[in-house]
Image 1 (cartoon, helix red, strand yellow):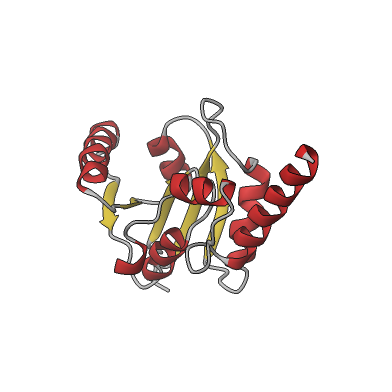
Image 2: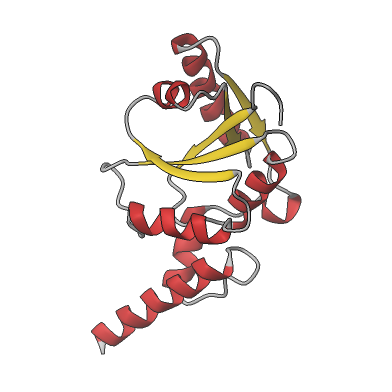
Length: 169
């Protein structure tokens, strides 16, 4: 490892974690010495999984990769990045509309902290259309998530669907 480790922060809600997220994290490991997956604590959203569940899922998926850390944060992203002694924010891009939004956020983050860079990564082609919102919709309607989410996410979503079906019956 370098004298100054290259630490990147990959922020998001990860509700739920998709194979697109996993792909970006795994490919990011070729670029950085450590990646901190930072789950935003955002009470304004209505997540399917609690923050603790999302932390547990990501830790389980990356249990064999100790250079992937999972934490939660609130407040300004640049403050959190600085507190972790990182200098890079990793963001995934799937669409042009993603780019428009992420570009604006990257420029604001640079304005707030000029020593922190944003690196955009596109997921592999087979995950370019996968979003957490679509995953939740497919899961709610009982569709197959095979190949779209890690097995632990698929299993947890199936249990939630079964519990909801049992409550309605």
